[in-house]
View 1 (cartoon, rainbow, N blue to C red):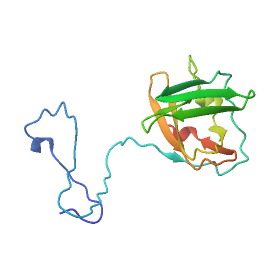
View 2 (view 1 turned 90 degrees about the horizontal axis):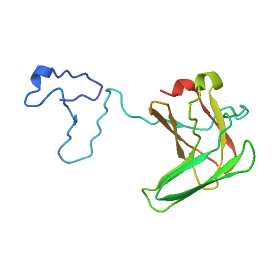
View 3 (view 1 turned 60 degrees about the horizontal axis):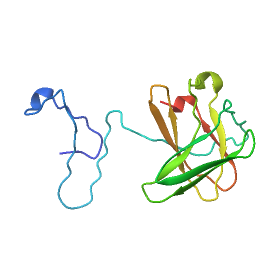
Amino acid sequence: QIAGTGQKYLISLAQIEGIDLTRVKEIVFVEAGSGTKTLNIDWGQFEFTPSIPPAADQNLSITQLPKVLPGIFSSAATVSNEIFSKTFMRNNYNGSGAASFGGVVYGFTNGINLSTLFPSGIVFGLDSPNVTSLGVEIKDLDNFVWKANLIQIAGTGQKYLISLAQIE
């Protein structure tokens, strides 16, 4: 019987029979029967994408990237960039279906050191007439990727802060 408050369960590997314990592909919890059920699970390192709202302090200075020519990426979408100045650009996106994606990429061939360039975190400004949330990804030279969702994007410029401690 599962209680209403957190309990720990131990499954000894000796209890698991009939499978190759060195090649486990899935672990599944199965709920059955009629009715609505909720299961709270405290376990492991889950794939998790945090949500980041606008910075509490909108007076923060924007942390400028090293000079870069912004690129684009897309799948089943048309994407373009318009660069208006050294510090301001617009990314235009038109997806053709629900599975479409694309956006702007700032690529650094030899990598950049965020700890050196932005020890207090990364601050940038966003606004949009028709986007309220969007994904952000930071990829290292070994192709490991950190992801977050930027939320509460408004029609007038807001600053976002990503502290280096958030990037795991």
